[in-house]
Structures are given as C-alpha cells and as structure tokens.
Length: 288
Image (cartoon, rainbow, N blue to C red; front, side, top):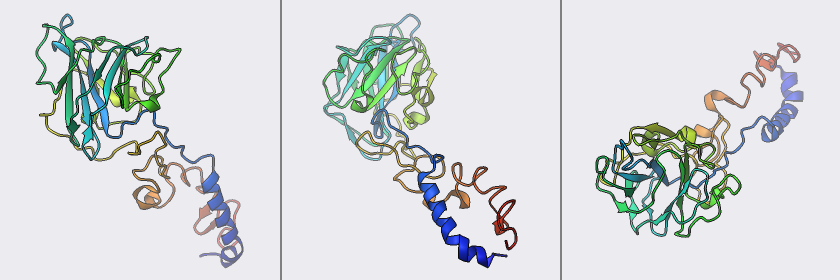
C-alpha cells in the first residue's frame, strides 16, 4: 500500500527533484539540426547518365517533389550542379515561374543526346550536364549562383539552400552521400519522395531510373519531418526519442505511460526505483 510518511515527507521533495532532473538531464534527446530547408520542395530523383553508353534514358534529369501540404512556387528558385570534388559555378538552371501542388512532381530534363529512351514529357528543360556517377546537386532559393563552395576545403553553407544531394564520392552532402550512380541507375528519395532526415545516404536508394512529371500520380506524405519552419532552426523535441510535428510531447504526453527511450526505461527507477509502491532495494519498501 502507499506509505503515508513517504507521501507526506518525501513526495513533494522527490517530485521537485524529479522535475528538475527531467528538465536538465544529460540523457534528454538532442534536437535535430536541419542542414537544408526541405520541408516542402525536395529533390526526389537525380540521374546523370543520360545518353551515356548503355544509358536507360537519353537525357540527364532531376525530379522535384512537393512533400508539403500546400502548393510551392518555383519562381526565383534554381537548380545548381557541381562535380564531385569541385565548387559550384556556371552549371545552373533558373526554374520557371510555376507552382507545384502538394504531393506533385516536377520533371526537369537536362543535358543529353540520342542514346537511351526519351523521358516522359518534361515540365522544364535546362542544359546542366551532370556526371553519371558522382556529383552534387542543390535546390537554391535564388537564381544567384553558389560560388566558391562545394569542395572539401570550402563547403557550402547548407542553411542557404532548400535541398542538397551529394552522390557517389561527392565532397559534400547532407550528412553523407548516396551511393555512386551509373548509366542505368539514379538516386531516388525513398517513399516516393517523402523521406527526409537530412542524410542523403539514408534518404535515398540507388535504383533503376523512374522519372515522374507533373502528370504522374500524386503522393501524400503522412508526416513531415523535419518541421515546416521557414528558418534553419531545430526540430521540436519529444520525450519518446524523436522529433514531434509541432512540438511538445508526442501523441499528447508520455508514450505508453512513462518515459520511453529516454525516461524511466532500463535506466530510471526500474529495478531500483518504485517497486509496488515504495523504494525497492534502498528505498522505503512496503511502508518504509
């Protein structure tokens, strides 16, 4: 039964200490720092093998995807490319003044030739010539060229771009680059473009090219991660070991009745905390 003396004497003191410990514990989750602002528009697919020997398609291409919940304008935005070890420079394309509806794709056809099958009808056409194996692509919120950054000695500030993808042995990526590509493979964002953790190696898979355009079936992303803030701040933190959508406690409070993966599970008051209403092995057991 509950020990009245503990409730009267120790309860308030202990609970105050517990609250302070939860607020300042070194065990609490650390907020995830976003590397690029990609809660709406993202780069969904990159293919640089267009018209290469044995190519699947006759042109390089990039697919954009709107994983957000509202239409996103491309006005003033640009796509920019740099080689695996080089800096960004003149290889850029100013996107047209159109909007991409929520859940829709936008196909940008780039440099190519006559080897391989034609792409589906592109939504825009540019002249960027990408490597079929290793490189870097950025979706930038202005038409101004990223200049003097991208090499290992001069990395770009990713808070100044919307999305960034490094593939193969690229010198820069979001966390880590995807695998190397080929004339018959592309880098594709998982779950139709919905997955976004700011880690190219985890968010993308190398697979047979599958270009989508604005006529393709739409895709609804159930949860948007990271949060949809307009700055480069942190995602909200929950106490169930992950970021919440909108902040606070995930699913309304404590997961499954307590602190899950960061609270009192195998490291809080288990086998040494409250057992059957008291302190077990060092507390007030069964009444003090």
